[in-house]
Image (cartoon, rainbow, N blue to C red; front, top):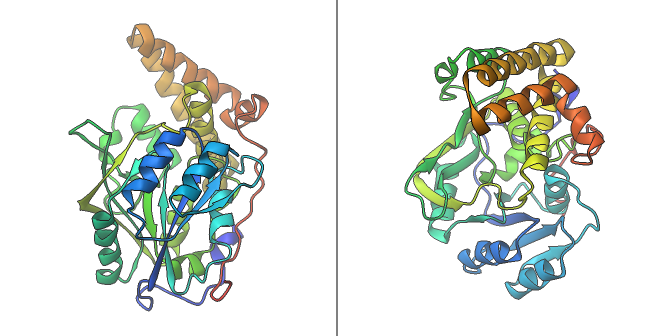
Length: 318
């Protein structure tokens, strides 16, 4: 494991209460209408920081219209670096952070339920609500097992159901409340992750330091998956590049090769037994992993070169 697991902190599980203050961080990209719905649902009850990776005049108008602080870095930083930029000036010893995708909608009542989870469970570093797509009555999966090479092999042979993630897993980052004192202890997000797996990595680091992750089924948010990027090919490349970077970080080159072999084997088998669009999708996935998703994503401009960086965040920076 890498040295950033040992980020020095001044908080530890069991010793840290929730912050007295909550700041909402939205990394904006894509639909301005979605951003307006996102900010409008909060009802102006919390300070909001919008980091606009899309450098959109419309996003600026929406953010400022709802009283949010607006920050345009002038370039698409990716999610991890944008979050780090937003929290870099906060006094995290007394401030918890709600990460909110611009295509997500969460009511203040739900936010308060999540905050109570931090009060009642002092070892919890991150908590997420139940989520579903607008207009759907079916809940999306929020709690997942941490990725691993052997987990990919279980999925390849059709036994993925054995990995429930209930004992050791992560919750998706589209609506995610982070305890400020856990951020002080664990550090910021690893900026080698451009989009996808950054919240997985942070929660893995938190768990390794004795924190816990929680899923709050009694709270519900709406989330339109993929609403910030309608280019499905580019989104898929970013997703799989994130998987490669995660496996390389946590399991090394050998672990990555074991995991890659599992994906190629599973996708190849599905390409034989399936037909139509499903077969073509399986062939694309096999080809992506044979070529190396990170290399392919960088070549096509979907992600920048991986530069590992985990900023130390501390109390009293404001």
